[in-house]
Length: 139
Image (cartoon, rainbow, N blue to C red):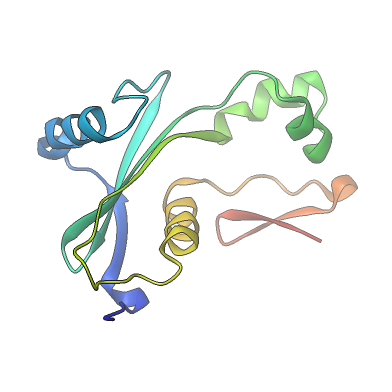
């Protein structure tokens, strides 16, 4: 089976002219369809120039108890910082021809899409959370 190297995997926001293809592909292949809610970002993962996956991010939910407990946010902190959080609303893996394999694509895609789209958040020493390369790292 052929595999890919990290240099062959690219995650990027879609181009304006790709929006129609992105939405049509989601509508045809994802059980929730193409409708993303709130402020959204649409990313595509390319393997050697081919669309391997589609990822749709949207505005964060207003209140998620486990998130607030993890981040130790008060109501006022949540109000100020919620704009820095996204929810993954859609992920669609494209089918690959027989015999082609992309090892750990889900993990690699998750890592690259987070690094490409999530801004660094303020450290919160009380909770042991610090920014690390655009993602959160727990100490």
